[in-house]
Length: 273
Image (cartoon, rainbow, N blue to C red):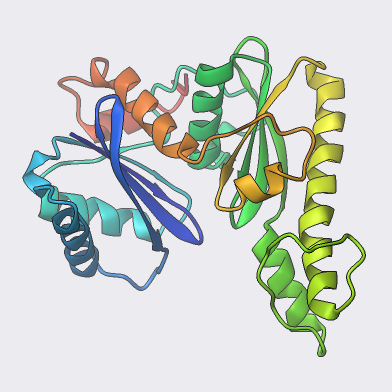
């Protein structure tokens, strides 16, 4: 079995694959003060809940955008699964050339999402991830990651607003009955939901002017379904886009990394594709 782990700023998403099927998945809060022992206990409990033996895990792949948490989860994998994790980063074969000014500054999750989006839909394609940040990741017709855009996540924007406005308080992000709100709660819900949907449509229209009008759009993340129901440009929602992308990247490295250590892979920093 393959364990895929995506460590994000707000959440850690895990999935167990009996290749190519996703058997189980979990979402945990990201806490930088966690220890490897605590993480091991948590993961062991999650496995027990679904009747899985940790010993069944033979391979692990991790993408991480929270550097302090990476060594913690590497130690967790060694302790609990007796397995060294493959880390998405320099030296990993993604099958996707990175055509940006500085490939090393691109978040691992963005590359993983782009790989899966291109595998599913071909190019050109835009993958939108509604997380702590809302990221737009663009892949060319030839399958190259060419950049994108980053926007504050919807929850981050709401938290920033209510922290600076004395009479506003946080609300649940749901669809209000009308665009014109009749009370403060509905005002905020309208602005957050319809405003974000409008932002997405505007960004996609602008990106299509550069990528081509036949560009396809796929969304992922916790609020993807809600935003997609209001945005006119999102064609498909894939809740497990990142986990599936991790599985794809692992498969592409499985044979190529045979007999080589993770340290050796990391030295091949120029082989981003």
